[in-house]
Picture 1 (spheres, one colour):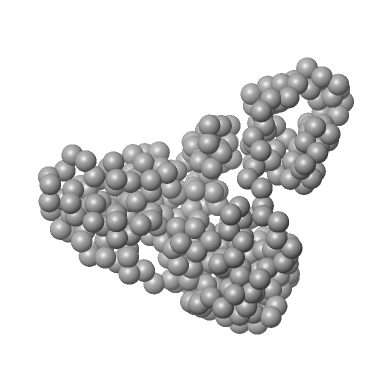
Picture 2: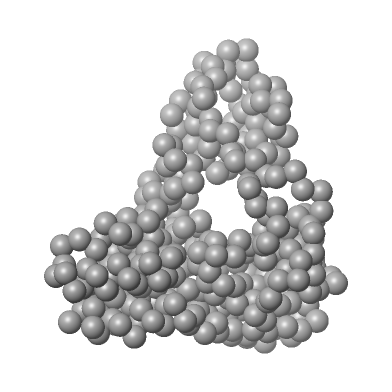
Length: 319
C-alpha cells in the first residue's frame, strides 16, 4: 500500500504512520519499519526519520498476532536436555511452533512451558514467557528458555554480542566445491512476499560459516555455524549458492530438485522427501556462558530419527 507524506513536514515517520494506520499501535508500526515492511521513496528507513512532506511511503501490513490474553497451559511432552534453577534447554521437535501467532493459539512450545514450569521470564511479554530466541517451525533442535528476567537478559546480551556459539546440521542439495568457508550476504524480506527473505545489500548483515561433513554429488551433509541470527538465515544463505536445504520448498529445495536423476535415485529422493515432510535442518549444538556460574555450557541435541534416515541413505543416493 502507498501513502504520500503530504502534510507530514517535520513529523517522525512512525508518528505519521500512526495517524494514518489507526488500527496499529505505535509499537507495531515501529516493528514494521525495523523489519523492512516500510519503504520511503523505495528504500528502507529508520523509525525516527523526519519527513519533509514530499516522500512516497510504501508499506506492507504484518500478519497480526491473534487476540490472546493469556497463555493456556497444555500438557505437551517436552524433551528437556538441561535444566537448573534459572534456565532450561529443550530439544524442540520439527513441526512445533515456538509461540502463538497468526492462526495458532494453542499447541505451541510456550503452551507446554506454561504447564511444566511455574516461573518463566516475561521480558518478551506474557505471551512469550521464557523465550530468548526462536527456531523455525520445521527446524528441530536445541532452544534455550529462561526462568527469570535476569537470566533472560544475560542470555539475550550474549546473543546480541555474538558470543553464543550455534551449530546446525543440514542436508543440502549438490556437491560443494569448497570443504569449508563463509557465506556473507545481507538479508531482507522480499517485497512480493513478506514471509520470504532474500539476499539484498540493503538488508541486515548476515554471516554463516559452513563445513562439509559428507560430500555427495546429489546430497551433502553440512555443519552450519551462523554468526548472526537472522530469520531463515541458513536456509537463504545455502540456497543462494545453489545448495538449498533438502525439503525446503520455500527456498527451492523441494520436489522439483528430484528431476534429472536416474529413475531409482529420483524414486528414493521422493520417498525421503515424503518421509521427512520438512526441511532437513537441525540445531545440533549450542554453547554459552552460564548466567550465574559463568562456566561454559555446551548442550547437544541428538540427530532426530527422520534426519538420521537420510544420513543412512546418503551413500546409496550418491552412488
